[in-house]
Length: 171
Image 1 (cartoon, rainbow, N blue to C red):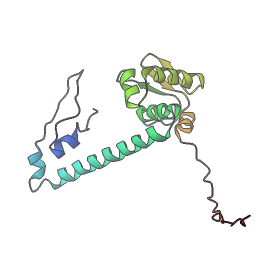
Image 2: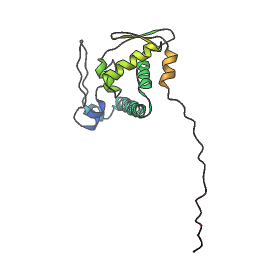
Image 3: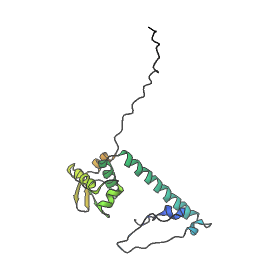
């Protein structure tokens, strides 16, 4: 969780038990906000912000689900790397992975060995450099090209007339 992010907002809003856990490895300040605070009159701005966060999370989950169904492993890893990069203005971009490669692989619905092979493949392609948990995005445009799904040619559907039944004369 990064500064300004919410932790498991959907469970809190729906009254369900939490589905996320968090382990802080550094000192943090955590604000707990009771749901009844959002339900009070006069909390419109806060409630609106909460709904905006929920909508963004639903969109992100929908996009990720679609990516898992449509994109190949190389495209998924490339897209994930691009999302980790701070706003890049060209040139090489350094990324320090904040979680284990196993956790990253789980997010991308693949085995950790597959993630390692895919990262090595991106190194071979000259798109990234890798040293442990530090990655350098060498060719952001190249990564973007790999991450984008190939546009498929839409084939025009050809309507064929239904087969005609022809009676054979009796012998």
